[in-house]
Structures are given as C-alpha cells and as structure tokens.
Image (tube, rainbow, N blue to C red):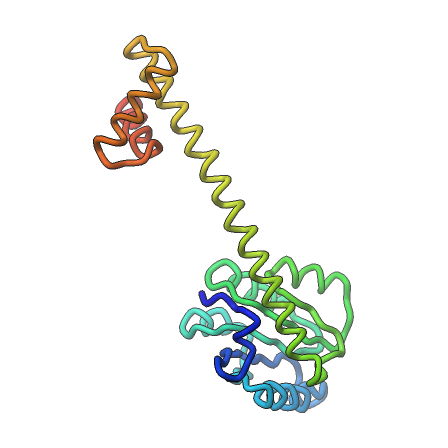
Length: 209
C-alpha cells in the first residue's frame, strides 16, 4: 500500500483515483455529477480510472488493481456498497471519500465504520477537492497507524501469555525459579535463532501433545 503524502497530490507525482458512481443515472442525475467530478480531478492532475458499473465488483477490482484513492459519487451509499467498502478496508485498505447528495447520520456512521475516510455532503467544488482529499488521506494514514499499533500491542500481549505459560511448564518440570526458567527460554531462543514466543510455543507443544 502506497502511503499518501500531501506532496503526492501535486502534478509531478500523480495519484491513481478509482472513481465510482452509484445510483440511478437516469433519474438521480449522478452521471452528470460524476462526469463533472471526474473532469475536476483530471484538471487537478489526478490519474482517474472510471468504474461506473456494479458496486458488487468493487472489492474485486481493488484487489486486482492497486489504487491510491477511492472516490464514490452517490445519492446515498447502499448496503451493498458499504459491505464492499468493509471488505476493502480489511483486505486492501486505501483512503475512501464518499460524495453524497443526501445527509443521513446513520449512513455516515455506517460508512465510517466500513472504513470511509471522509463523507462529504453536497460539496465537491473543484477549488475544495484537493483539500478534501488531502484531509481524507491524512486521516486514513492516522487510522492505519493506530490500527498497526493496536495490532502490535495485541501481539505483544499474546506473546507474553505464551512465554508465561512456557515458563510455568519449565518451572514445574525442572523445579526452577521463574527467573531461571526465563533465562533458559532466552538462551534457547538465542541458540536456535528464534523469538521467545516461538521457543515457548515449541515447549508448550511438547507438554501438551
């Protein structure tokens, strides 16, 4: 995943934008709005790839082709679209902006939960697009950083539990103190070129199988 920086929004380094249209183009007027949005993005020197078809294929398309930003133009995001966005956020996360015609607090909450970085209602003016995209990308980067830190914390806690369990088996089997058991684990890890958690897992497997 390419980290989006403000500098990437300048002409010398184009961002790839996947522009999606959702809605009844014959009655909702989304098509005209999307064409206008597309032209505005092109004028700002974004590399726009139009995808105006079936929202059910959105996550598949994102998995097949890497994009820097996903922009959706809609009256209001459908449940199908939100499901696709949630899948994208899990598998191939990227900054997502929704430009909507209708303001609905429940839909906004559902969109943010699905991984949307910015939900903008009736505001896709060309002179504000760069700022809106920059803010959305910055928010996405912050969300990804927080998610990474949370995952690392969870992994550390899980590893600590594994090490504690392995120490318990060693203390019981070899009549060692806690410090002696930990020293032995650390020595085994160094000798085998493994982490404490890996060595601990091996020991647990021996005692439980």
